[in-house]
Length: 364
Image (cartoon, rainbow, N blue to C red):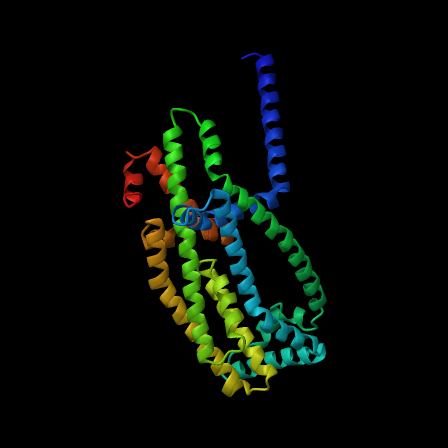
């Protein structure tokens, strides 16, 4: 190899690195658009069975079926939001009457009550509170910043929601033509395997996301029962909030329990309830009830739903989520099951003779 070939190789390597860097920078800059597309794909997977039902059973034209599906979805979401409007207005009215000084006083009173209660059991909380970041919230100066951030987020959500609906419409409407164009780009010797993989992934992910909605509905119902039993204010909103946290496996339920307990304690303090005899026992009962819900969800509903929807063993699902969480954090836990399911389908289609893959894909 002469100097000219070495120089040419270096130039090519530098060119590849520069092109890769530009491509990665471009993808980073349009990451929001990519996120919209991914959300639209998920929604299209959820709505595709409804579109098929309207086309096959009710003889709707393709465009009309898509528009009807999106319209029904919009009505469902709107009705769900309107269901909470009276409660949100009531909370807004209460918030407008809140005296920040009194709120700060209640906050310190809550910390004082917790400290006194734990000190009675020889648990030193002074050092714990001093080393924690709770004191940063003591002045409640974060409230205006939080409101501004919330309004900005609401504006971004409106743009994102409209964008996702627009993209979803064309994905559902042009689904068949997208498949045809996709097939034309594939190499002839691998076309059948790739197409079969895409169709099977599509089927399994549709079942998975529908199963996820069913699981969240079950968890929300169980949380609601717990909150109603113990007289928690705004039980429906809190149950919905806690159910949404369950999208994040294993970590989400812990966050949900903490949030619910804090809401119960602050409500009790605001109502003037006795901390040791009323607020704390109610909080503990709510925590125990939510823990029982998680036992039911982790050992009965989730394994049954996800093992059926993805044709995977519950232990498989648990290990995949755990490994993805250790490697990629919360985002990895959320996408672990869909990604693993896709890999199984691809492995079965392209490496059917491999013993390891056959062992993991025998139920597919």
